[in-house]
Image 1: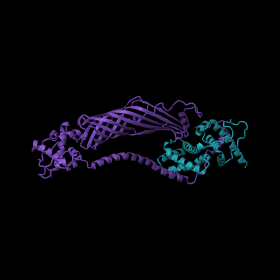
Image 2: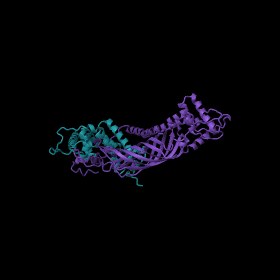
Image 3: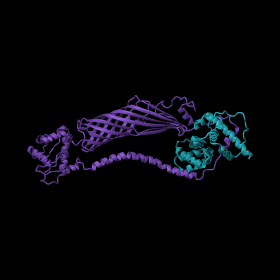
Length: 186
Length: 439
């Protein structure tokens, strides 16, 4: 039997379905780093972050019987979705969307700024800067960029208008670009 | 779903950003695994709790019934065989062979045989009795009658009367005494007899030929639950409705939205048909000693739930139906004595749905977006056949407790409503009730 990553993951899933606690720990160890990164982009408070990760893993382990392994990356994607959902659940109702100006503001085509150069920027820094974004911007930014949701989907998920999602994302990008440039100057 | 192509318009740096963060890890919160492990271990007993609850729910009524029965068995009830022996036997100068029969044997078929057999048992037990000690048996009937209705002092008189009657008409022979003679001798007795007719029934069976018995009962059937992937519904065409206009978030209908929201997940449909609650009243006519025919009214309440989607976006339906039915049953006594009846029963039931409710909640991304309620109806009749084994415990003269475990088969009535009868046509049911002899 060819021993590759894909098979190993499949076996891991099968073991967990049978309540193998060592397999559960292995899954945790494999993905906790990545999932913490995902979650901490949404959740700033350390205590909340911990709680949400805990709830997410409990959910992962208890609902894994419904999970069908569909090849490389499917497990990671499934787990990520659970974590994102748990994160959103915790604060979705109270997200403050910053509307400095009027709500449906068309994307700012005029004042074009240079795209920031991020090639040499370490991921930790980008993570930190993203976390500095205000809640509304940050959530929409994350969902769009990392979770690959369309504005329509984001609107449904967060219960906002599609236009709001688009404008929030636009503002997030501007602010993040600003922060990157500021960081580089420092 | 690869949405990168769709985002061809997006800025390059965003695209690079995404790639950069793809495998970025952050340090885990300290001690998180231990907390997770602890919580997982705690979760396991909850399943057991659910089962305990079920056991208690079932155990209480069953044990209640069992306790009742046991209590009855050990109680000092004048109807028991034992007690009959201990009845007040007044030694008289009557020939031991004589027996006094005070039951209206001519009214019931087969009673005579029973009664004599009964007496034989008693006399056999009295073998050690003194040869001089003559005894005669008074049936429980009359005894209780005598105890309850007449003052104690006149007890002896009554007995004397009957003894005298016996002596005058028979001697040295087993002679069946007709109740008529008692009546003639004692007018008062006759008058009271008609007033308390029930006391003169054949006590060896709960119901005699030509009698009516009313039953009140409750029946429980099993429940079903099943799970599959995708989106289902309990009524064909009920939930996947046309798009609803007017929702500013989207132009699609609620279900479409839900499906859309779940697009990258595995959605499930869970159906649960709960135990139907069936209760009824019936009236039974005893055709002959063993066979009786029964009909009445039943009321059933059926409840089902369906969940479709994922935890984030789903619709949940609750369906409740009420049926009225008319049963037709034949019962056949396999074995019976004064206390117990063992019988088989077979019959059919015709039910009609008189009311139905279909209520759906639509939840999109954890938010309840719509509720829908509608009345449903089923034009088709629901036919079923059943067969069961029955055990009846006669608690009092005219009250009995019974339990009938059995099977029932529900024919598909081809309606478009999904009920437990369609998913599980062959059902085990357990009926418990009380019977009252009207005569």
